[in-house]
Length: 196
Image 1 (cartoon, one colour):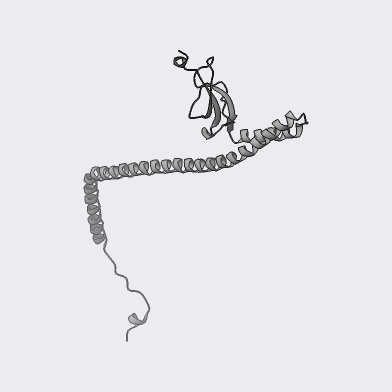
Image 2 (cartoon, helix red, strand yellow):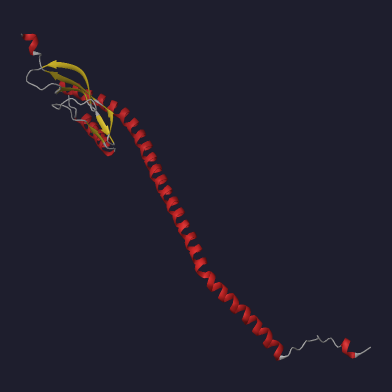
């Protein structure tokens, strides 16, 4: 047995410089060919990529618009729901306020001190103001079925037809919505034909 096989050395293949240069020039030639081919395809590739970008921009705009619309609608629905619940509560609250107002009128007629009741009414009015509940002013106005409900008519030749002469029950607006119309009495001029 020879010592060469048992020496534990790793065999190395020696390549001549000529062979290396030939391999390098082949690689450079391939690389140059690729660059030339790629430079011809670049405008086409750029145009394709620009089209893709344009399509993605359009999709993004649509998605953004949909999101903004959904956001507005959700906000509007939430506000509407909250305002509806506030209006329901305030309508019940106004009934209690009416009872206190009637009690104050009775106490005032009886010449009893109503200072405590006046303070309670002021607090109730502050609460209504806080939640944007405002009374409908009707006395002396012309009847409007959007704000008023006529429950009686009186003859008065000195007033225009449908002038509100008396508020029987106060009406209220909350968040630009009528939550209770004002019950009113309206005037009617006498018919002159009847007198002839």
